[in-house]
View 1 (cartoon, helix red, strand yellow):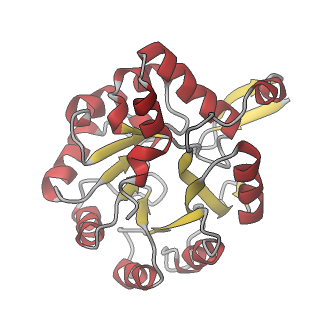
View 2: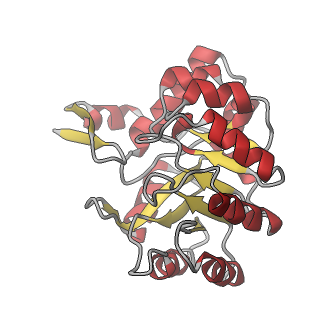
Length: 269
């Protein structure tokens, strides 16, 4: 029996069919696949993923690489210095692309961002639910502006446990218009509202990790990037979700390639 869990610890699905699904799936032929959403380390809820296990899965599924950031494992100061250092060490393997996780609601994020920048970090991860802050708060805006000033995209949790998000993220975007945003889980916390605001905004991407199929079908493929949310998600169902969306929405071959890697890769300069 295989169980699939959400980031809030709730059981999303229970199935005997995952092994059969994996047996039918292979990496998408002739298309790079780049994962935008992987947690490394051990989360406070008990989920964990080691870099060597991730690398083995990337090889197994033929993925080109993965954006990685810490699980919810802050230090006593509520920042992620130790966990970010572990991710950066793992990123000695070029297939792993390090993002640093910051807590806008706690002191010290400026120094942690500076340390991460000096070490070659490629983006920032923020989790309003996990760290109990609002996306449109002054503290959040300060972090997003600081990241944008360095050319870094910011990936926000925008799924399970989130409140209505369209208005808060619109306020954040207005306050930090030059920072590129990735909204995780297809914006599942408020998917229709977020799509109405950002579907045509080329500075905002929605990752597919644990997203709703219907939400992805309703988004322009140029606004989507592939994500798994490992260790909460898995590559079998994550790849299958995007394939189903592509068929239902009749995406073209270049659009499919963009969703699986190209849309995100352009941001990882």
